[in-house]
Length: 251
Ligand code: SF4
Image 1 (cartoon, rainbow, N blue to C red):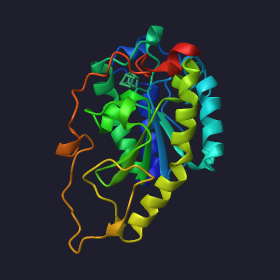
Image 2 (image 1 turned 180 degrees about the vertical axis):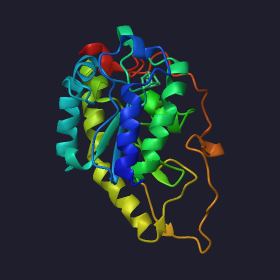
Image 3 (image 1 turned 180 degrees about the horizontal axis):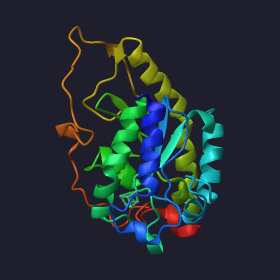
Image 4 (image 1 turned 135 degrees about the vertical axis):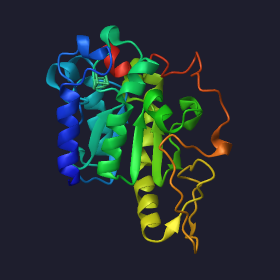
């Protein structure tokens, strides 16, 4: 089965999925959309009002802002895959519950495996936590970390900036570095690796020659490097993105 067929199969399964309680209240599940082969994948938190109506990701105000951010970064939305960690809208726009995240995790992991992106941009703390469960978005945003051979770039959710205008400059600044992260990932493909032992700041990043014996040990997507485990998993109470899947609550 090729990647397009796998993604189609996942979308069909998501559409009728009843693995968690979110299926009771959803109107349309939102599997995600984009080409079947991408270099860049975006992962948000959960569908909002318009997403639930249309069955498409990021079509509300947060989606419009994401489109603007992508345009500023010179990235075409048509060339990226966009999805969420939970594919159905939580009622009342609540934060995804652990059991909902857990029930939906397999779909996301299969999408990542099928797409095989070099760069994954997480939008908001729940998608970041999928890869970096101990990170705080207030310190991890705008940085990239190698996770299981992919460059994971943590960003605030676009709707966080709509909630808090003071965050807009930060979000714009973080997205402005996206082309640099893509280039860094491409350099890695060309035979260079970036230190996998620490988060990468685009302004400080350096490349190193690839090791003679490439590291081939397989890790799960949740594996992180020990020195990244610096914070407990609970998000800070004063985190600007603490309102959870803010894409949900606004629109
Ligand atoms: S959120 Fe995910 S696990 Fe829950 S019903 Fe929807 S597709 Fe299934």
